[in-house]
Length: 151
Image (cartoon, rainbow, N blue to C red; front, side, top):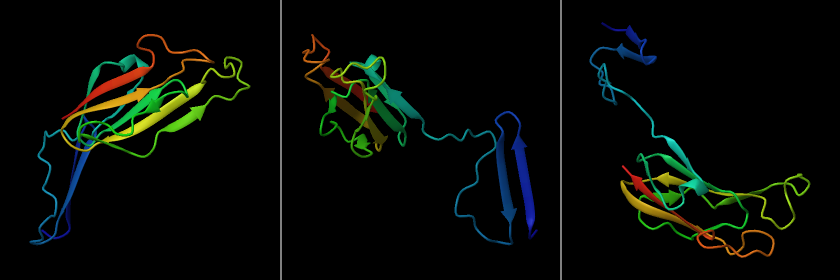
């Protein structure tokens, strides 16, 4: 029946499915079966607390790694083909007028964003030589390594 519009609202998930029947026209996208869960890949944020750990992210997802010091430098590449940088890392400094920021302390953060482009494994690395004003980093403080599994 031409011009027929059908809508189904599933209260449990708030999902709305709508379709139009127009003669014998074929739809370019297959219909979604009732009861199917539709989801988008999640965005995941990792910090210093994740150093040395392994995280899992969905294929198509977005990984943000935020390290709290402007002294961090991300590696030039991630190992593995599962992640692709979404641009260069961004440094955001805390204004020197902030009461908790001491000059030379590296107040601020460095953030790198990656797209999960293929199933597999990748390792994100970062390093720093200084952990404060003229202060060398102690054991384990100057290296960041995050293993990422993309599924």
